[in-house]
Length: 489
Ligand code: G6P
Image: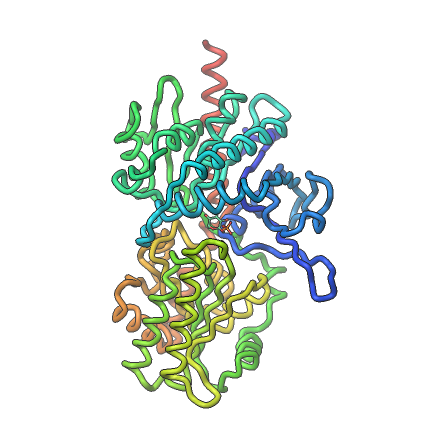
């Protein structure tokens, strides 16, 4: 890291770290978006005090935010710069809703939703990627900045930046899974996307499995030399190092956790708010309202649990937070309606006077509300059908300094490769998931403590600074190597 001291760090992502909304009194409210990317990247930007370029996506109305395109965001340790790019409605439709979220998102997640590829969306995606790349070049204060490119919205940015700043150190992190070559191959622009990504110095994925899929995909579709042993792809003289960097969260420090409400008070508050009985057990799910998250499978499992174990009737409440997301897309709209109908059916079947088994809270929740919910929970249920990492499970673990609470975790989330003390389930298996839920809410305190203590040690150590630190250390090595080679040439 010391090798990077004084170097300029520019991060570029689609999503910005702030949402601006109008409060009831007409005033502007600033909130944080529900995004694993923001959760992970913001502490890193605060630590290195860099420049973050993003779409001004969190503001429905441009008048609400600072008129300046470049603003300072006050941080925990240090402030950082936010430089906004404003996309037109049409650009956002084609690039973000269309190519990124109707094309690449279902292409990379195995959730059995068919990707949609339209030429017009691809054209918008290319044009918007160019706008982001131009902004990086405009922000660069030297010939060789360190550029952190985030995610599937910006696959073409690495090569576009490389063209203008050949000496930049470009680290690209893919926050979602990378599929196998057959699946990826259905994309009509597979080669262009791969070439764009290979503009990177380092290309990071959450797991080794995703790295292997990527190497095989390149092997299948491009003329490239692949050194599997060292995980290096060469196209001509250009090399890209492909490595797994499991993402994480900033582990809360003592000042932060000291401000949290006590566990008993959190339970009381949640019970009072939802009208739950004194002895209620609480299981929670916290997700963006997305079809990859396995929300239907989870509610089916709750229903099956109530069939198999009627002793939970009137006692177990399942609380699902579902933050609104991408609702303009038919696929999301339809999914969200299906979930609402399912919840209504299960509640009608098992609900009684004054009690319902499922509480669907389909609205934005801020960090403090989520902390309260995590601390109130007997179990946290993450049943993604496919997920790059999933940070909700790590946030739940971080919130439980009382070492209680049980994590039920999908084997198809990257996190399952690290969090072995969770109850790992296949969400497509209703029976298994229902049994895990039962086991979670009836687990003895000593077993809860043993599992949670071990999970906490793991997440505290492999926190987000480890994620960023490992990438930056690798970048430092590659940077040095490039400089030495340039001198010797
Ligand atoms: C996923 C993506 C992120 C994105 C987040 C929220 O985690 O990998 O890039 O920020 O979802 O989605 P949204 O479409 O609201 O940005």
